[in-house]
Image (cartoon, rainbow, N blue to C red; front, top):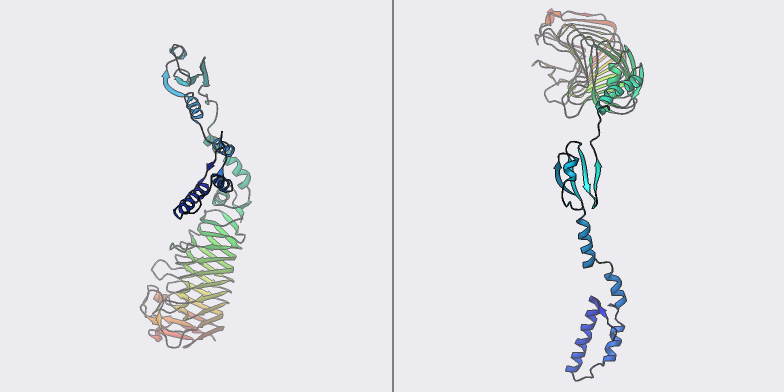
Length: 438
């Protein structure tokens, strides 16, 4: 029997080409190639497959017989047929098929027919003597927390660890952060916390009657939410020792209801007021820098009942900057019956140094500069009265509720420097209560 050749696409194309050439030769009365020529041409084609190669290639395909075997295998897969009341009812089933599965109601067990007998799958496990994971957690987590966070010092990396330390029985604790915490921490009443940020960042601090000493990191509010990064109330106290406070959309530190702030070192930067005290709050500035982007470095509240603040500046620097048209930058803004005592440090403003509309300012020492553009005036706070670039503006004309408490005392060593002068009295100068000992 002659050997057979199986041509692939390329071999078939070569054969067609050969036949076309032959027909063309015949049409031109040329010699037609012989069968031997054709056999030689095909033998030299690169695209043919012999019988052995074809058999090898087809061996990878499923035959009809293979498929039938596969279907038989599928027929033995388990088939759930329903439920029976008990084992006796199961065994009474006539002519079960291979793979039939029934649920036995009284035991909760499943059984399958294996061709000869019913094979048990197992029964419902009785777990009544075992505890749920949530019950174990209720016992285990407090035990673990008491070990990790039950003492007076811990390194933590998340809000859960911080809150565990804040809630333990220790009156004074030291917390060192190992990572950023994008949460606002709440310091409870009666708790004193040494918070070493470890170069990391937290979203904010709320101090409600407790005390926190912050160092070595950043307390930074969200750039999309109008919130103050540090809020102190109910006699709570914040001590800044080398950390940074950044308020993106409002104030840096807001104090109310007797809140306290001590700035020893570090910085406070905010869009509006760097520090905003009200309601009998206490601010002590020994060092560091307090600044604003578009208002006053330190600004009190002029509303009746929100004064009574005590502010003492022994050192450090307060800066005032402005970006809003029609307004003037201010270093320190005092519109209520507050008492501001300056013993040292610097107040430097792109507009007016100190604007006094109520209360008492005692300037014993230090430097106050109002470095605005000469004769360019603007509003400060919510008053419509415009003021200029003086070191101190003594404003009676705004007629704030605490106007009658206005008093300015200047010590012999005080340095006042303003683009347009040292002191500007706005209103009837005859009624100004100013003592200048320079």
